[in-house]
Image 1: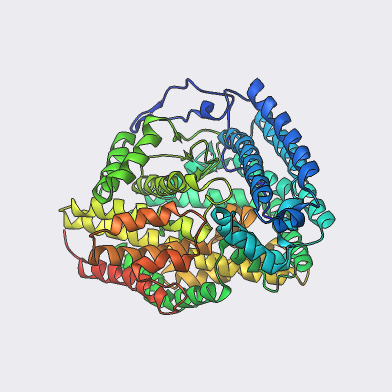
Image 2: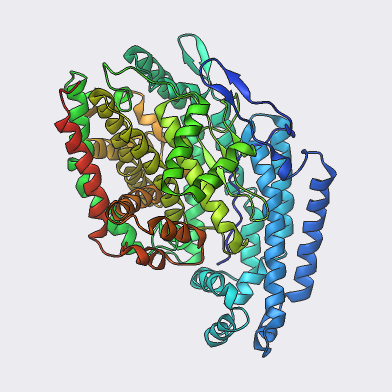
Length: 619
């Protein structure tokens, strides 16, 4: 089964703001805007058009040179011809990735701008057309006899052995070439088009809060405001805005779920999440063990914590808009951008100067886009682009403590992507489970550094509470998301789901995971509709829980034996996609295949909740 090039817009682009100055805000200081000229000077640059034409020609030339000839090349004693073919294929993949990285980042800056929408759509269409000519390559490699494939992988092609073994795992699920080409070409009018509709719908939505028409990021920010009435108004407005668009969101969800069912059925996947497990290079039983462990821990984690938080707020249960509220009687802190930068870099430097030096480049060389803007893609991401370039980070920075943690998270991804780059376009990409490990570890380093320099018991409690909430959001909430997705995709096989049915599945899972300490009021039933992972990357979400529990275990090893840990950790990141998770974790004495492994990470969260209980009443 060939790896499909993602149709998800991983960033957005405006027309070459290569000399853009940092955007000044009242409290945050100068927020950086990225410089995309390292990819192309502008949307209308001759270089971009030239590369599009070059890519189309290269793909056709590759087809003419190698289609139907790989078995003969593999049987050649030296293997030089097949090595040359793989190297040429890698170069074409790099070029196609370079083009789509730029187009995606342009689009992410303003998904509502017609010029950028067209630019991204045209690029996506041309790249899809071009890449259909090289689609045969991985399919044909997988048709090689097992003994012959093993022989070439052990010979001159040894460098590419991890990649060859990786794509071969998809062999049982690949289709006949013409069907694969049909699936590939129709992706831009199939799931790719529905992805765009979702992005552009979300970006164009405005929520009425006290007469102000706000975009999604400012509204979500208000839901963490110290004032309860402000949080309530924002939450109600958010739910109402989503409800007005539920017909569209339900149609997108039903269509994409059916589209996935068709693909899974034709390919022979037996479980609704098996395609994701294959892409993540993780066994189904490993994920099942993780899910079972987290679900069993709901009472000890989320239920226990939210009861405690409700007590702090003097309530029998928290309203859903209070779930991530800052603690009462603790002044809310705003972090200017420069402070956030220094906090994260200092934390990284204390762990590894090399890690900090890589992260510092993101600031110095303008690889970050931080301001909130109308139409900008919500949330945050780190886009790896291609190994010959460098990653970019998108944020919607508003100075909250969680924004500092998000910066640490995305820079963890960025450092990982830089370190993995030398593996090349075919082997630099990392499965989501391990990719989230790097990001969550960056968060943990930053949190621990901040906690160490906090002397006030009240502030320490507030920080611990915020970290526990982040971990619950990363572990409990994401497993609840995964369970919701499973129910949705399984139910969809019996027919189309109404918006009310989807809302019912959502509320059932949310109530079970959050427990009696959270009261899920009217409006919350629609909150499933804005989660982009459900649309762009079905079943992605368990990777966050995998990463968080893994990081807790890694951090425990680090605390017990710091000597040489940083070097082993950076070596793990530098491996990119060349090793299975079992190989990467072996130097740390960890094995995710052991069902008891997940208890290590969950017990760390449980211990932090116990620490909060012991701090109750301190000032």
